[in-house]
Image (tube, rainbow, N blue to C red; front, side, top):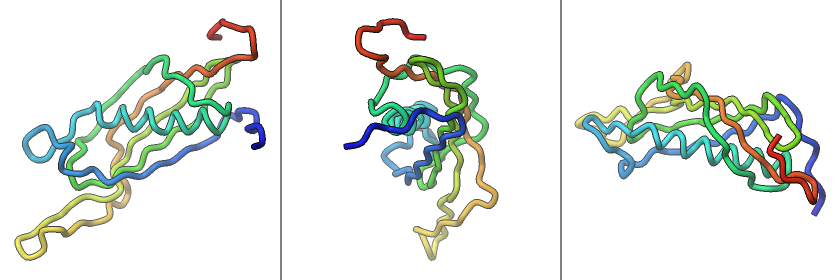
Length: 140
């Protein structure tokens, strides 16, 4: 197995996921904001694996914003872009967008449509920490 490439600002990780009805917590099939934060954790984990060969740990979020509701039946796209590389810390810009939405009718209860342009539902800045060289303990 080869060593990962050094972390590069601009590196991008993208995941897509269908939001099943088991995630709906509120009337109208609304999904709670924690669902999106968990998906941010997933893309951040892949980013750490790609850039540092380790799953890393989430140190914190800054400026979390909920712009639009996520609903059961949506297909969401989650993006993490590496925007800062420290010795052990990495800052990520995180975006969750809705790319498809359920549009059921009486005749077609499973109908869905693509959302063009995608709806930005949640944004945040996240900081992750990865292991440093052997024998180091400082986070930055």
